[in-house]
Length: 125
Image (cartoon, rainbow, N blue to C red; front, top):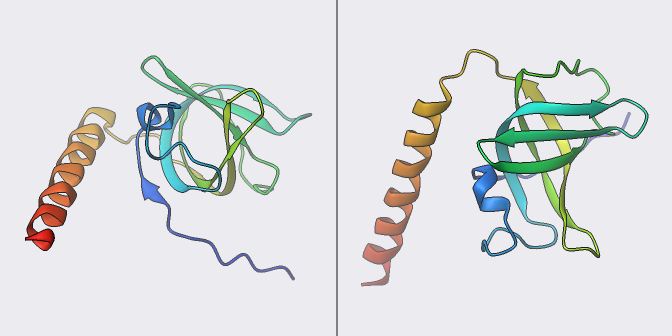
């Protein structure tokens, strides 16, 4: 039996997966939430969206997860940057989180980022 010792993944939004973001680096461990827009069982690639932001997710390690377009999913994995500068999340953990209040989720994510920025500033002084 194979055991994956994974990282918890930085809690980020799909907006943070743009090339201009500090999280957009090869191998960065992230945790994202998005609505499933497309899924191909042949390629194992899923496309999740959040507003205008899109991210491809490789689901080859997620054997027991059922995918339903329109449902909301959370994925944890490492970001792979392709030669065309497209990011693909290599997911090791995935779960359906239908029922989550995405507006409240985004508000809490913003508060977390503010707290972390203040904590870093206070630690530096």
